[in-house]
Length: 386
Image 1 (cartoon, rainbow, N blue to C red):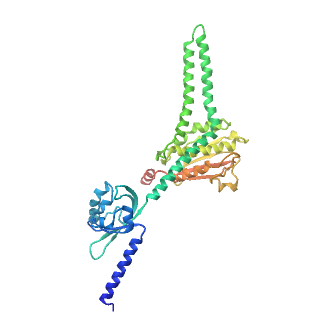
Image 2 (tube, rainbow, N blue to C red):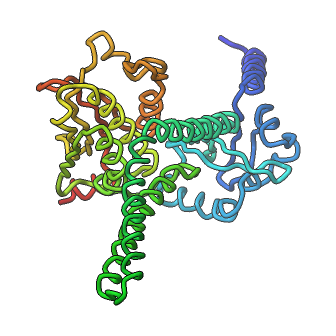
């Protein structure tokens, strides 16, 4: 039978071990009572928040929160004790924490409730996410810069087609201008014909300016912006650039837009970059082939999983079976002078949109490149609710 002194010694030993364990933890650990007062604060929490334990014990835990959470926390705790409705307790989430110097930092908080013989307490495990978030932000900035460089490279490859598309209206403007000069030099000016000539000049100038404007929109440096998108509008927004690129090589382009497609969430410019990469590859694969007159088919459609899919069908030389598994890796290319980075950038962009980039043989010869994207959450909820 254990003596009373032996039980006390064991309790003291367990307490010492628990204290050592708390101080050895790399994550911050804090506990509060039902009044929201801090009753435990380990060394990792001291490093995380910049407070000594002696400075916070007995103080309201809300002091570790920025506004508006600091003011809202007491009411939230009372509501939980009365109703059991939890927002963090037993769930965990990412929140902002407030350090002693007033600076806010991102943290992951997991809270558990401890019920003993006395009043209950709440234990929180707090992990500093500052380094992780900084790394994610830097990766996002690098991805944006890489995508922007990729857009310049892509436009360089498409330059011949775009120059052709712009030169056509400029040549027409020059022709109409000469005609207008002749009309003005006539003994009796033909005002009607002169007016028609001016209208044709204006139309051709507008045609050239639209190509340049779409090119400027596509090339403009910008941060990734997530917005609600119609994939048909995304494709149509740069279709004139695709047609200019393909028609310069004598390749027709046909677009087939699916109807009643769900909306998606994403960055329109980056998705257009992926689309232009795929069509540029199709042009390269067909420009020296015998089947160029068969043209390129572009399709948007809904898949059986409620995803939205964009595919580019060419009749070119195809992709060898040996390359199919590695075609999206950096520096893998079928082009004689290609760097093999366009598809790698495209895969990064589509992955960031939680989609899938794929390549498969075309049954009639050539290749099908495409990507699928998940429907926006509100579109999925509407689908389930109908």
